[in-house]
Image (cartoon, rainbow, N blue to C red):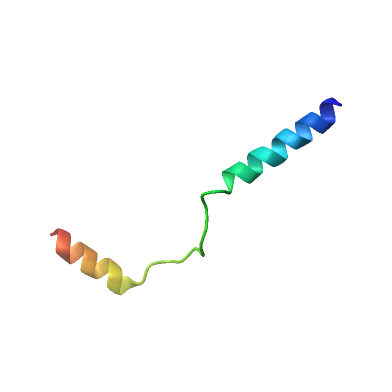
Length: 41
């Protein structure tokens, strides 16, 4: 019984951790970084 509760808890925690993470990961291009840094200076 204790093993079942632990497993359910871990699965629900992992599900909640992934809720807000959507979309593909990507590296911003250099042109975007250059335009942002020139605007801040």
